Image 1 (spheres, helix red, strand yellow):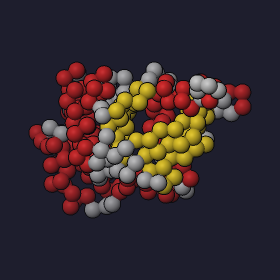
Image 2 (cartoon, rainbow, N blue to C red):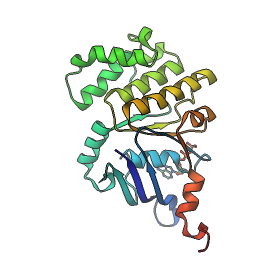
Image 3 (cartoon, rainbow, N blue to C red):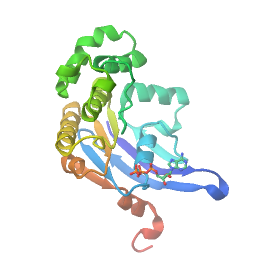
Length: 230
Ligand SMILES: Nc1ncnc2c1ncn2[C@@H]1O[C@H](COP(=O)(O)OP(=O)(O)OP(=O)(O)O)[C@@H](O)[C@H]1O
């Protein structure tokens, strides 16, 4: 399973108010490797994740997940790919208020496959693996920022996605938690052999990653005028 973006362009707005955020981008991400996506604020990291995760259709280009072009699929097939093959973890954690840590994971099962009861003990194990075995019945408002991030990570991993997309996972945690969370992400990526792309400003995440991709370099590669000899 690999993720390959070819000629990906994303434009927002119309006519005179048009902004080109990604311009003919080519990049490939391999399985079992965690990539840190770095670059200045506004360089398009979150936009790239949204396109890769079939949350946003590119203006042009292909998003090949295991050879299948997500950009060209119908809305229904894109939704299916999101449910079955892609795990997300966003900055705020996006936990559902009022649900316990275990139920956060079961909600993902319910949306995807139904019958969450059969998965209850597995949800407990998944939370234990991210160091939250003692917080299974806690609700988001009873958890620290770092604990909420780890619930969100366990939830993103729960259905064994082939593609894991993560935006600023360490924004709400202290330095030692940031290092632990980054190491955990890298470890799970290798164990599950998934493609993991993490947009980040955090050196701790970049350090734990197997590869660093700089948006500035991608953009320079994509723009023909910036290529040497042209
Ligand atoms: N829906 C939208 N409409 C118009 N412009 C948008 C939209 N979404 C994003 N942008 C613009 O696209 C650019 C890239 O945004 P993006 O969030 O991808 O950057 P980023 O690298 O993730 O930034 P940060 O590090 O601050 O999170 C920004 O200039 C932003 O204003």
